[in-house]
Length: 134
Image (tube, rainbow, N blue to C red; front, side):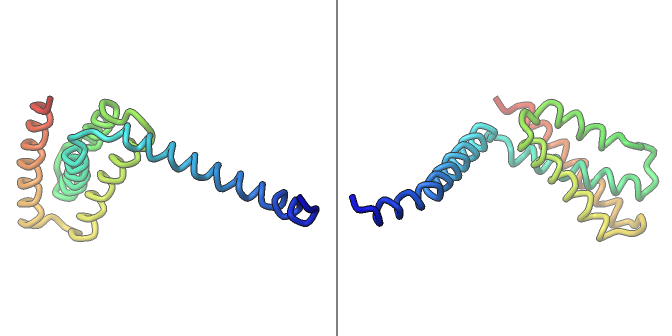
């Protein structure tokens, strides 16, 4: 091999090693994500979102719940967040529900109270379905 070709190969080796390292890291992340997935995750994320919305709306409408709905979310995360990625996804869903309704409602209205009732019923249905999931 000529000296010029050897120089080109040696210059490219660090880049090649870096590319291989990124490929291995991304493969590992994909495998970890697949391991963290459960068949009921969509329901769980929806329940988290509902808990966030109810937490905001009950406070807005003067509910005496205090931190009840947030505490329920913490319990859910303690039971289901087996990894940092799952914890982040559940937290993101809760915060999304909270923020969505905090942008929509600035005072307790009949519509806000109706939303609370709707979310309570939907949340109960989801919780029942999750309990029955094998």
